Length: 210
Image (cartoon, rainbow, N blue to C red; front, side, top):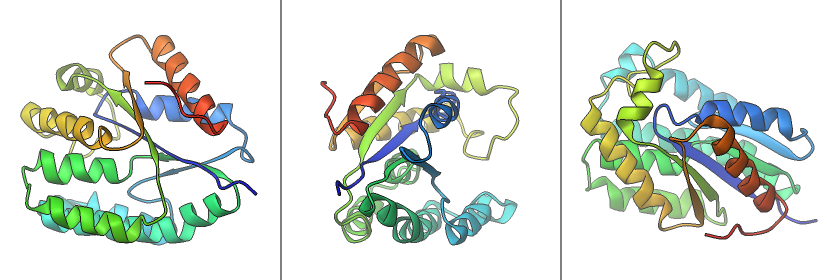
């Protein structure tokens, strides 16, 4: 049995990530791909997610958040992702370690966390090699799209400079791993066509061209 592939879909606020993942969920049958998210994805990780995005969680610093994200990820990988990959199921995740690097390290300007991040990644993600699809968008454009939407969190409300650093962090992170960057500032129909083209190639065990 072939091992499944893990695809991480990431992007800044207003990149259309949630919309595209909803479309993907309708496109791929449950026996073709499993959809999950971070933080969360397993019962215990979802409890941690609730803690992170609570009013009390809002007051925690970047070091605490980084620890919580990795705790949730450890359970998610052990309980959901690894078992699915081992039985040949493809897994598509809404965010993963790319977001932790971009938000808690680059966004919060905590470069000293980078070495800890790399150590945690080596331990918890041993043998797991995601392909990253980054939906890239200028933060001023993305935040403009988000204005007035419901379901936002306190990260969405941060200053524009924070989101600029997050964008830089996402681009920096994926450059070190197998990835495709998609210009998400274009109309949804065009972005979706490229997004699904890349997904189809990956899930067919191919590697999309740069």
